Structure formats: C-alpha cells, structure tokens
Amino acid sequence: MSFAFEVKKELTMLEVHPEHAKAELAALIRMNGTLSILDHDFLLNVQTENAAIARRIYTLIKDNFDVESELLVRKKMKLKKNNVYIVRLKSGCKIVLKELGIMDGMLYHGHVQNEIKNNKQKVKSYLRGAFLAGGSVNSPDTSRYHLEIHSSYEEHNNDICEMMQLFDMNARIHERRNGYIVYLKESEKIADFLALIGATGSMFKFEDVRIVRDMRNSVNRLVNCENANLNKTIDAASKQIENIKVIEQARGLDTLPEKLKEMARIRLNHPDVSLKELGELLPNGGVSKSGVNHRLRKLNQIAEEINQETSVQKKEI
Image 1 (spheres, one colour):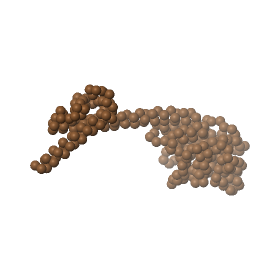
Image 2 (cartoon, helix red, strand yellow):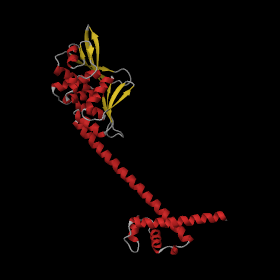
Image 3 (cartoon, helix red, strand yellow):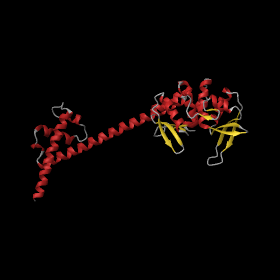
Image 4 (cartoon, one colour):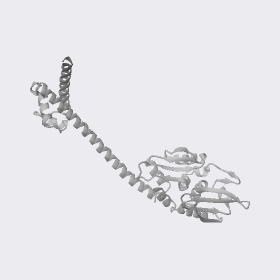
C-alpha cells in the first residue's frame, strides 16, 4: 500500500459540515466526472479506481442531494485489469451541477466559484476533494519530496494553485502532455498541506519519517566532513614530516633555530597528533595552534628552498 493510498484512505473517513462537503464534492465531480445525454437528459458518471473514494462520492451525493444515484463496478480490459468504480446520477444532474457551481443549464463554468474561493474552510474542503480526485504524494522514505494535483484544464489548475497560496504553500505550476499539475517540493509545505486537508495522521507519519531521515543525512554529512578534515590533517602531517626529513638529510636539524628544531623533532616523534596537541608537547608548552602552524610553515619553506637549490644544481651538472 503506497503512502498516497494511505493518505486518501484517511481522507475518505473524515466527517465534514454539509456546506464544506459540497465544496469537496465539487472538486471530485469537476475532476473525475463525465457528462453525457441519455433520453434527452444529462447522465453524470464520476469514475475512480479507488473503492473508498467511490463510496465517499456516493455518500456525499446521497447526504446532500435528493437525487437518484448508484454505485457500479467495472473491470478494466486494458493493461492492469483493475476494478473501476462509477458513481452514476440518472436524475437531478442539472440541480447538482448548478448548486456545485460547475454548470448552469448548458453553460460550463471553468473556474471554481468565488463562494468557495472566498471561504477558507470551503477552500480546505475543495483542496481535499482535488487531492482525492487527482493528487499523489511521494513517501517520505524516498530520496525526494513531491506532492502534486493533476488537472485537465489550465484555468482549474490555476485556481487550485491560487487556493493553495492562500495558505502560503509556495505551490508551483507545470504543464504536462496530458494536462497541468500544481506541485509542492518542500517537505515542510507538504506536511502543512496534509494537515490542511485533514490528513493529520498521515502528516504525523510523514514528519516522523522525514525527521529521522533528515537527521540520518545530517549525521552522515558530519561524519563525511570529519573524515575529510582528518584526511586533510593526515596529508598535511605527511608533507610536514617529508619536509623535515629533507632538512635533516641536507643540513641536519641542529642547523635550525632552537624553536624550529624543537618543532621538527616533536613532529617526527608524533606524526599523528593535531596542531593543538603539538603545541602542548613542546618543551615550554602552551604554544597556540597558530604558533605551531607558523613554525611548521617555516620548516616547509626551508625544505622548499633546499629542493630548489638541489634542482638548480642538477641542471648545472
């Protein structure tokens, strides 16, 4: 069972106020409904592959309208042979569509009615219906966060985006070959949207998994950073020891000033310790990290001079 399926299952079990239920039903019918003419009258079919959503549509119609409806089950014949559930209105289609702001007589209204868009509670219900009809959301276990709602028509897609922006969702729009989508990419916004449409349980699950996953990623980043720093320290120490040996072989460490001679011998005897620890190991102790680093740079410069002199001598020969 996918995470999106679990979210929709939770949403279909919510109880809502009748007026808000009509807003949800308006989205479900607008996005999943098809209208045809039978015996000089409208016939409305609302189709879905989700049995719980089909029952939800049937119940919303039955509880809010005095019309004749039925719930049918068909078997898909192509590709995946899943069941298809159809809620059919044989009578009263004009009344239902007019009250839901979808049609007025033969005139189709492409935009969501202002009565819904101007009422935040109805907006929440409409968005819940839109997600049930055409929404999907990635599991928080996946490598990327993504929630989207698909619409067949651009004007309706823009309305959904506008309603989501009422709650600062930072929603974005994208055109696809078969329609349009409004989508969210930020994990916090996805969690906010799930809470907004009433999927509180799914929101908590999403947040729990996301927090653990993000924490694990943070720990991995810290470990990688520490490993990188450790490798840099090891490389620097190896270079320092190599340079000190160059000085020792070419001139001898006793030719160095006292402080540099002490530093060179401590580094040779303790190749794995940090700069801070080197400062504490020096005879007088209490030399700062920057002081140790300064002395080591001096040793590196002397070694570079020796290497350059050696290189010139080889060329002269």
